[in-house]
Image (cartoon, rainbow, N blue to C red; front, side, top):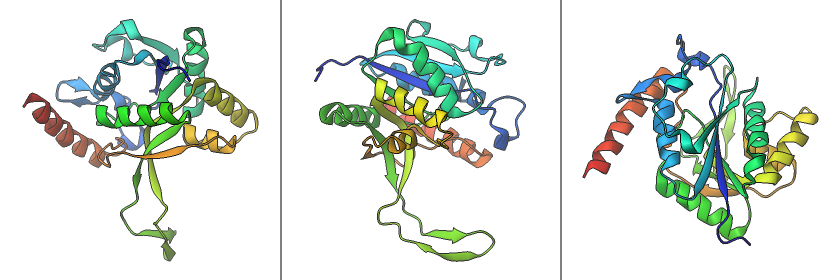
Length: 233
């Protein structure tokens, strides 16, 4: 096994954030003087082992070019209709860099910690298998629509987070195969699972939230302020 593998990151950032009811995509919301996407990319750029970051952005995106980011390790790739299309576009663009591993991280998860990313990378590389950050489900889970039809046992339930890390060619192949077979892909792990590839569950912080609703945004603003206070000590 390569002791110093080449690692790339893909950040799908082509979504429009319709649930936020905004005039611009949610990844460009401001938090403490930076956009959500800038906070996210700053976290990724602070991982020394990462050689390249591909950000999949809509062709109509008018905001990305104005971001204050280190462009030496970041390339823009075209976004697709679905998240999986954006990720595959980015992977195909990264082929020329020949990475051994790739992490995929949501643009709207600016709170991920370096320690969680390092733990994910260390465990995946050590075992030679892909894995995802995940948090054990803590709440009681109900099944149903208008009425509860029952309680779902939560002993082996996890909430999938990002980053998700996999061998580069294995993920690229799994996504291509799943899309060709019209398989519904909700995250990169689901493509790997469909392709009978191992996916480790690696415990991560539950405050690694994805900004999807206005309530998420308010919470993210508070949590980022707390992170900044901690780092300033």
